[in-house]
Amino acid sequence: MKIFFLKILQVFLFTLILVGCKEDDEVVTPIQPLPDNQHKVTITQGVWGDVLFLEGDFMPSYGAHSNGGTIKPVEREVFIYEAAKYVDVVGDTLRPYFLYKIDTKFITKTVSDKDGFFQVSLDPGLYSCFVKEDSFYWAGGGDGNGVYMAVNVKSNLVTKTQINIDYKAVY
Image 1 (cartoon, rainbow, N blue to C red):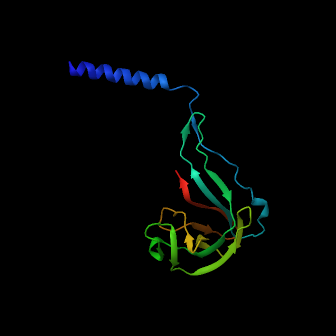
Image 2: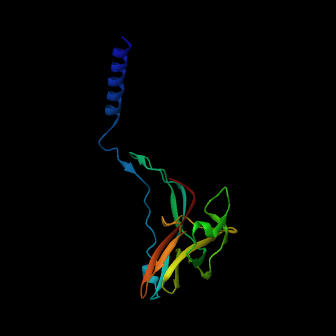
């Protein structure tokens, strides 16, 4: 008898799920236009990119509900180091991408403009890009090989990168 009621309950719940789904329910994520700064590039070899601050809820939602995260270009100091792996940095133990010591060679620094744009002429090689956030260096991730914010500069090419400062974002 218990098995019969469990089967009826399963059918009832499955029916509720089917009735509750509508064809127009689709995943909606907030999409905002990112800055188009490519026209500002004046270098012929090195790295250029955008520094963006992400804040809020970027979780996918269904139907007409948008969670409303924001993306803003920001002015920040951008620091370029020789490629820094996880073993080359010391960071805040509670906030893993906030670093206070980088043990690879410092190359140069620049400042992104109000549109988040920055550019730096560099020799070919593998580099790490960090931004200053409060008194820490921010590194929003790695390349899968253990290198923080990796940028590979090749001869006579300009490499584009995007630095997302997203410690106030939820995914």
